[in-house]
Image (cartoon, rainbow, N blue to C red; front, side):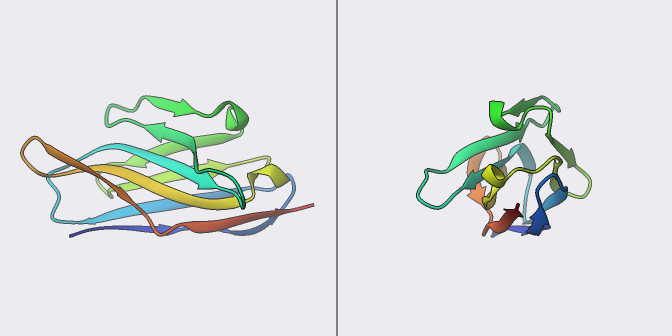
Length: 120
């Protein structure tokens, strides 16, 4: 079994900062790409940022320059540092991780989601 545990969400004022964490546990051979997605009320889930096992980062245009994704492979944890938060960043944030539990077999797992609310 693979579990993703997210933390760090909450209520923050406009212009403030939050850091999200996503820790992977279970019988894992390897972790591939780790990413953060978000879903606002009435909207589709969208990619926020991803980071490959080699460290290559990719961001949605709406968060470039404000958000930074990183990972600690020893801790099996991904982070999302969110600065200069805007009301439009209000959403449930989900962690998504590619995990290998057997040789050459990969599956994607989702976290339970953590609410981020930006107040004006």
